[in-house]
Amino acid sequence: MEGERPAFTDSWGGVYRLIEPGEFTLGDSTGVGARNESPAHDVSITEPFFLGERVITQAQWVDLMGSNPSKFQEGWSSGLRPVESISYHDAVEFLARMNERDGNSERLGMIGIWRLPSEAEWEYSARCGTNGRWWFGQRDVELNDYGWHAGNAGSTTKEVGLKKPNPWGIFDMNGLVAEWCADQWDPNYNTPRTQSPHRHASSKRRVTRGGSWFTESDSTRSTARSSSLESKTSDGIGIRLVWEPQSTS
Image (tube, rainbow, N blue to C red; front, side, top):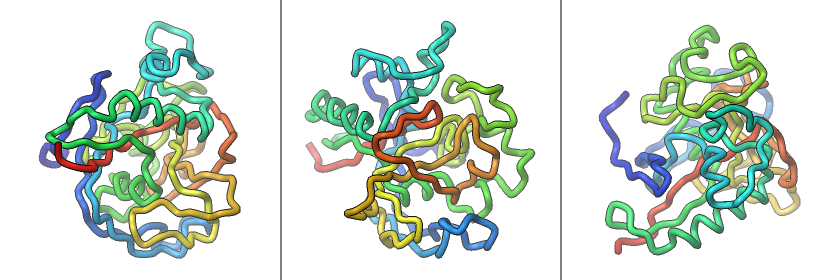
């Protein structure tokens, strides 16, 4: 892993790592991706943010929301598995409660807010400065060291953080569960050249990223995109949070 990035720990022990500004090419520039991954375009990440090392677990969800919607609840370690079967609207409610609880909490001398990552922030954090199918290379056989997918998950989710992290210290971005992003879906990829989420007034679909335990390896690539209706729940979709600094305390 690259040099240790500044980080903080939340009240559940979850770690959030600093993602620094930079520029990258969003989307598939190799010509082998799906049609909705192009046209590739340059994006500037101008504002730093903190990204969760791991997706939100069932135990964390239950502690805040009081109930568990997840399909895979069996076994002593189920609390350490990702929460799934949550809609985009459920994710928004979770974030509202997080911000109500933590709104005045100081982290690294700053006050901030919890939110979902934009699609650009998600891909930037998944790529870690690389341009291949995955940050670690081009070969499917290497994926087993870094992600859970249809070829190795055994038809179920797993505890978060069991696979190796990417160079920026983030776990499970390739597989396990797809992750809701803040962006409304645009199949033509007319998305911003900034880290801001895409807005499409008529769209009822939101971007999901990362692939899941039941998708083939190709769906876990860094540029692979998908979408779901905001009201949809799936045992293959969960959430990873961003903490955005707003001001110094």
